[in-house]
Image (cartoon, rainbow, N blue to C red):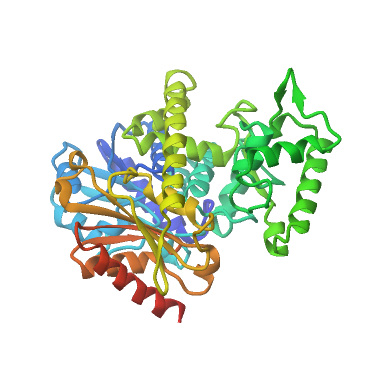
Length: 473
């Protein structure tokens, strides 16, 4: 049994053997959508295997977090969606616990015996396998084919980690999708590639779609309504606008075709027009018309819990709580959307500073540091923000959130897959630029982050600009 990713089969099996041999396990995970789904995959697999465990979440795995993990009673710690980048610190606590790592971030300059990471076998951790995917490999090694239903959560993690392009997930992720489809928990299809097909009324679906901007519709409420009203379709029920999920196949084809025509007529480049239709993933066990039915909407719901210190709520939803936890998550999602919208308006109204190879803005305390990266990603390509260079965002770290108090600044960087193809690697940029000013960072080629001392932003931007110039030649 090679498992879903043959390249990682031996590593996953070694990790599973170590977990089976443990008296108890501490499961430590990151807090974004990928981290929450990683934790849920691992928790379910541990429970099914009858292995006692406790769970902790960390916003970042620094020395203090590792020290507190080492102080617990557990002799084995399973790190999911982080751990690889902190191995140089983890190994210093070898006498306190045995680390088992299921991660996809760039490994630091140390290794451990039980380490399931695609990068160690030549697979791309930014685009081919997420943290949840690595956790899924371990879960499959632990419980065999009985754990194939967990592929659904692994796909939510990969999509939440920005690994899906218009053509869907690629590389090792494809094998996990296939297992989810075989297990009957996932459906792969081709559809309008806009966020909110399950839950948004049609005018909002079109108005808020930001990946491909169609003049007169995108960001234009009355324009979106006019476009829909001009179609010879009955798109309302009981006076309310229908959602995409409410339409018949014929109605969807009519709307999609009219959208494509409008995009072409408005001068949207052909390759961007093609991006309007893409690969979609549906969770077949979830109720139609809910945030949990569509993989992208599910991942956004999870982001809305963890980034507001409620990782416990996100984990409960992943583990099947469709009552109180889901209600709480929806409330957090409404709040999250409001904060994202306000953050984006702030960036649009104040603009960004454009350097030779990078553009940036400093939100101070006006955008929460846990969501400033998402705002930066949404701002790329918005009015007044260029698409042809990466964007860097700064936000002050809340004194209550950090040992360092007001002395730290969170940095988030976002690029595009086009820039990555040209040589951009924001993981390296964040790490090297941050270290040059006394901080540290890392992540993926298309999205990365760092923490730096307050007051070093200008020096950081200068260093990042030089590094990006070198990468893009």
